[in-house]
Image 1 (spheres, chains in turn yellow, cyan):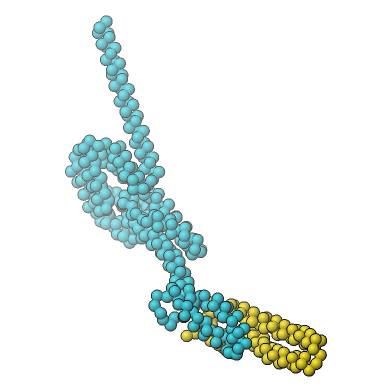
Image 2: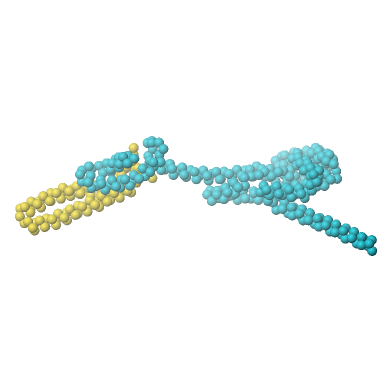
Length: 92
Length: 309
């Protein structure tokens, strides 16, 4: 059965996903920089460096996912046939 | 219901955002599900309207409802237009459609002299009438007026004029003209009927009915009068005879006809004029009678006084 939906609502959702994931990515990077600075200031030793690396890996892991979501949602918003290709047809 | 809705939401989410990683499940799909539910509102509403479950899609149902409404509106417009057209056709095919005023008809078609012209000439005139395709003017003048759906005409005329554009405008104008023409014709024929009733009434006072009927037969055989005209005259004779028997005056008959027509809803200025004349003449005759009786009483009183003196 071909589902027909109000595509405007779906577009709004995609826009929100794009904006929030972009904000999350920016926040992650900013937060990582601040955390790195703080950690290296308070613990200027190997422990501090290891913590920074661990946090960095975590941030990268989350950031990669966020980046993928940002890219996917951006492509989805730019593609006019995105919904049609997925069997989502607009209602009248 | 909710299960169906959540299944639909899941289906749409899977198609919209196929990635099933933890981040997308936690972040993107959570946001998108809210919007997908809002987008599916139409489907839920339409599904409730659906009588039996089929494979008809939601938007199609919505379209069908809209189209049905439009069809209903269009059909009502068409009905009103059709009613107007029917009324116009009734007017055009009615007995007064080829009506000519009496004077014009006489000029165009000289009537044969009843005595001097033989039956052959009268027959020729009748044939000529038949060729023209119009009944005789006298017949038209006294034929009963067919009733048309007035309310339908008026209501439909105004509505169609609004909605069907120039065609409806032309139709309503034409129907107005026809209506005016018909009212004029009705006034003429009823006025003539009233005067005919008076004449027949006076004739029956003097002559017996049989002599009048013989004359009518002669006129019919000479084809001076058509069968319809003769039938109208016979009906008038019947009315006048009954009135004479029952002691009803022609004025009372006129008033009776006026009251009946008014009860039906027909108002004609000419008839009202006739009625007003009748009332005035009756009042003046009553006044004359009262004066005469007063004069008689006065003269009687004076002669009695003289006698006493």
